Image (cartoon, rainbow, N blue to C red; front, side):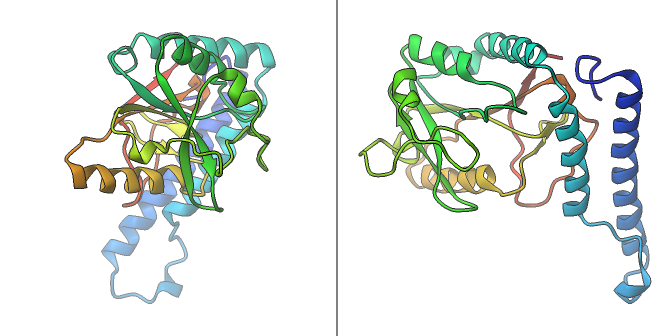
Length: 247
């Protein structure tokens, strides 16, 4: 659902209704296609793809996020950080991956990074290498991050040619803090749409399977307006281990 902190009641109702309609059409379409497998695709106009439902869900939740005041965003981000610090996964982690936030329209991770450095944990942050691929490279401090050049999304990203350790090669990493547009109570996640994280998780799993090391705990973090009844997924979407929010 959409929290009262994110929108007024009328906005909440319209957003929830939009999600219900989109998801409802998806399941109806799936039933129609299953019930009439012999029909030509052009005769079934109700078919709605998972991709289309995801796009609709992103639109609704992004609208709610854009309406947040800086004060509400800051308080929600602080509350989420405090709850993350209380988790066993964070307390026992030796090294972790944490995304650096976009300047607006997204939960802020500065407090998480600051606390992780203070707690003596190794921190790895994303660097996009193409329109669909990324790596996670080690950052040494908040001061270090402040020197990173800004990406197209205005996010500080480490350079590739500085000899920084890569998370794929670091067996100490036991936690990845994951961003998302939306999450549900089954720990399913809707990303921005480029597939960066799911591809990265797949590569990390492959690398760790080869050496017999288990995957890090995957914890998604988001604000209450990002929690929805159901996130549509496909075979490439990783299900997270836990969601931490301010709800």
